[in-house]
Length: 257
Length: 303
Ligand SMILES: Cc1cc2nc3c(=O)[nH]c(=O)nc-3n(C[C@H](O)[C@H](O)[C@H](O)COP(=O)(O)OP(=O)(O)OC[C@H]3O[C@@H](n4cnc5c(N)ncnc54)[C@H](O)[C@@H]3O)c2cc1C
Ligand SMILES: Cc1cc2nc3c(=O)[nH]c(=O)nc-3n(C[C@H](O)[C@H](O)[C@H](O)COP(=O)(O)O)c2cc1C
Ligand code: FES
Image (cartoon, rainbow over the protein chains, first blue to last red):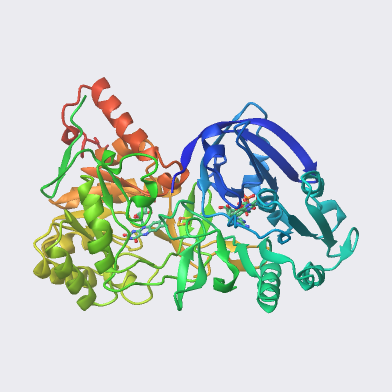
């Protein structure tokens, strides 16, 4: 697997909602390699460990990638203070992304994103001819990227935990309703563990192929330190696999949450 | 071009900057960035006789100028190391140190015997890993334990043995002398210090193992002090590590008494940092008219 480690220019920065930022980074060599569901490992000046952030969109023609992140602590806070024209030191693209499968005509895929797990689902949905996005947020002020999904012709269903916008409650009920329709070829998800657990079990119930993206605290980000493992059932054995290199995307049926 | 080569316990390293065990895997993960043989050498991931699954995550926590890890020696076992990784690494011309760990004396003896007939250039005895409940810490924290393991491994292999010392002891010098007496060819230090971080929102330690090994720039002064104390007390070569991230750090560590250095955590921050350190050492040699790095080793002038 090929990746780069270099400094790349931040060419566009937007605050997209309270504490949430969208960065467009000029990095043609990374854009050429990048696939949906992969991530970048960013060095925030002054910190020992890099911060993993998903690739939200790739534009090969313009040589850019886009990332969207929320301020969660001192590292992402400092990251948010980087200005247009400044360099971003990143190792990218990393990990195995979501599969881009051949889907029969008349079939579609569903992407499911929860909170800060929404960004990687945009590029994933864009990689398919027909996709539906099911996006879950805590409340209206946390909603991000829905317009980006819609602008790309992706049918978009929003849920909020408090019902302040869209469907009230988790994505489980609407996901079940979509799967009932019988035209879903695969589901892909990124979000909190309870959401992933529900996606995996519903996909299994309906006999639909699923993939989920996992999160873990990282050291190297490239597979060397075995710091970021998760439990995966593969070849009939429980294994400790690396989120950064063997994942972050795993088959739903393999994941032990 | 200066000659940066150094000889440690009879083994020649093309330059004095070695990747530290556990931070560089078996090399392959960094191969997309640069030829691995630009490094002085690679100390491979701590290897046990059989495959080990390691600890439950989270295994990593950040600290001010450092990090904690509680990987718990997850590794594929010595056969995979010998058959899969070692041949590839040697083909690329790397100087390879096998870092070995065990729970019992038998483990150490068996693994040393297994490695004796391979191409590894040196065996680094990790008797200091704080993460494994049996063995690990107990071997390396007493003179008796440390010398028992060294003696057993000495009898099992002709390969040069580097004993890696833990800083989590009252008197590191005593342990250094004890393993020297049992036939250690050289020493490396320091392994990680035992540390802990707590998430104040959840009241949970960040590491699932509760405690873990503290590494990175924050531990550098402790490492320099220990290398200085040990290098003054033994006749065998010393390899220094702990928090090195710049050429200045590496030179300082050599002045304290190290013949070569290892870098770990700094590679996570910047995968190119070992190459930058090598370049910086060369620049220092040129600026100071140094022909051989042994001129730096131990050159500190204590008050
Ligand atoms: C594969 C992957 C993709 C991700 N994609 C995104 C994204 O697209 N947008 C986004 O906003 N966030 C994303 N995250 C989460 C993001 O990495 C964390 O929010 C961020 O590292 C927090 O850093 P901090 O310094 O602000 O927080 P602190 O809590 O101060 O960080 C302390 C340490 O813990 C680590 N850490 C804390 N929370 C997490 C976490 N949830 N996951 C992994 N490491 C963590 C940090 O990296 C750092 O090493 C992703 C995480 C992973 C593993
Ligand atoms: C993630 C991680 C894993 C490690 N695994 C090992 C190991 O398997 N064997 C070992 O002897 N030391 C291990 N170490 C310790 C390092 O080799 C080194 O002694 C220590 O990190 C101090 O150096 P540094 O500050 O440059 O990282 C590990 C360190 C880290 C950070
Ligand atoms: S972060 Fe080092 S192996 Fe994944």
